[in-house]
Length: 280
Image (cartoon, rainbow, N blue to C red; front, side, top):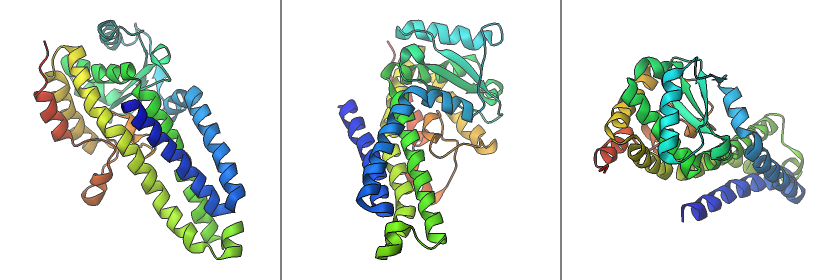
């Protein structure tokens, strides 16, 4: 059921990109953007992990450089019956982590320098178990593809805004479609965010639960989430909205209405659900 829902949501992102093309350049634009969407999906499948890691200047670290992280990742990979992922370090003091890769054989986990200075070993183990759960459930490919396509939508919406500033674009100028462009430029990124949110939120709850099982206890992850939430508020991470859903806690902060559109569930609710997990 999750795979069916995810496929539908990714199709919705692709359709949104096609609608943008139709608004900007008519039927020819729709056809062009359809092939652009296919290209983005293909490209993100093979290369999105490298793009995301490069975006955050993540550096692969060896076992001698980071023995504790490698030891934990090796143990958790064994518990999950998975190949050991590559380990990356992100040069920022904002405490956070994410996993990426198109499948378990090509997976990588990335942690920030800040998370190593914030969490104790049990808490770090809980975080890495959460990321290994994403790897096992193959969430990382889905979320990374969604992030890539959502980024394309945001980029195209930006093109539309520039088109309005420069006096309209092709089809819109000739047919008086300036209002369409304006609505699309505002609504498309929001729609992409909502679709990402639908993909991401349920998967975070599932990864929390599975991570607790892999770690043997929910306590470390529950404490880690509380610390990471506080830490991320005080040490901001310069993150792209398109890739924010990949992180274990939302690196982007916004109160009021924007909190309703967060790609992550509320931390308090995640912790409450974790406290209810019974590990054999």
